Every structure is written in structure tokens, then in C-alpha cells.
Image (tube, rainbow, N blue to C red; front, side, top):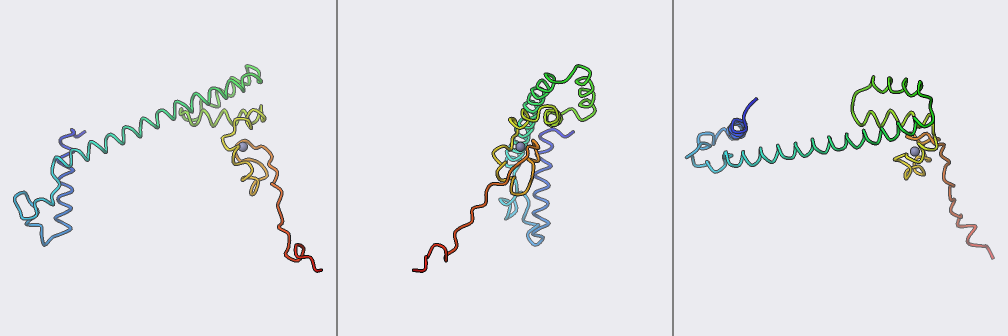
Amino acid sequence: MLTFDERVRRRANRKNNRLRKRYPLFAAELHPGGALADWLVTEQQATSDLAAIIQSKDEMLARVATNDRLREIKGLELRSLVAEVVDPATLATLDRQRAKIPKAGAYTAEFWFARLRTYRPIEAYARCEHRESHLLFAEWHDRCPRCHLPLTKPPTVIPPKAEQTMLPF
Ligand SMILES: [Zn+2]
């Protein structure tokens, strides 16, 4: 694993070599002290660029980790709702099934939402993240693809025809 300083130097070299390759006629001047030296990426620029890249990557990873924790909590809430209506043996079977899929909050939430849909469809419907879109879904689906609630198409409004509105007196 390279140190931060090594990565900075590698980054600056790579960018500057790319520059020389792109402008072969000026390559001789693209060196410290050359006429086009100010086109070169300095170690200082490479340092701040690399620091910004590392920071945004760390922030992204932190967001992913937070989201995963929230999904895990959500999944366990859904599990407790299922646990209220199934016998202990069934719950143990479901827990074994859950253990077979990857350990990630998204999987926990997904798995238990699907079980809730099976055992308590009304509770699943109440927790469907797509409830707001149900009317929209009704255009294409008979059931919500998420909570499986049957959807009824919104009534189609037919605009009155011109002949009907302009009465022939
Ligand atoms: Zn739904």
C-alpha cells in the first residue's frame, strides 16, 4: 500500500506525463524550468486534489454504512411484526432462511418486508415505501410491485366532445 506522499507524487507524475504525451511538440518545455512549466501539476495541487478525493470517498462510505444500519433496524422492526403472528418454530425457520442471504441491512429489510407481506398484508401495505405512487402504478400494474396490494385504476375522465358542448339551436 502506497503512502499518501507516494500517491501524491504518482498522481502528479501521471498527470504531467499525460500532458507531455498529449502535446508532444511542447514536451521539452513541459518540465520544471521549461517555458511551459506552469502547465505542470504541482505536488501541492496533487495533494489538495487527492485529499479531496479521499474525503469524498470516506463521506460516501460513511453514508453507505449509516444507510445499512438504518435498513437493518427497519428489517428487525418488520421481523418483530412477523414474530407477533407466527409460532416460534416458524419464526426459527424464517431466521434460518434469513441467515442464508448476505449480512447487510438492505437484505434484512427486504427479507422481512416480503415475510410481512405474506403474514400481514395490511401491515405491509401500511409500510410500503411506494404508497404515494400507488395511483400511478395502477396505470401499469394490477398490484403494487412492492406491497402487492391490489390497485384499482383511477377513473378515466373523457373530455366532452365539441359537438356535445356546442348545442345546435
Ligand atoms: Zn405498495
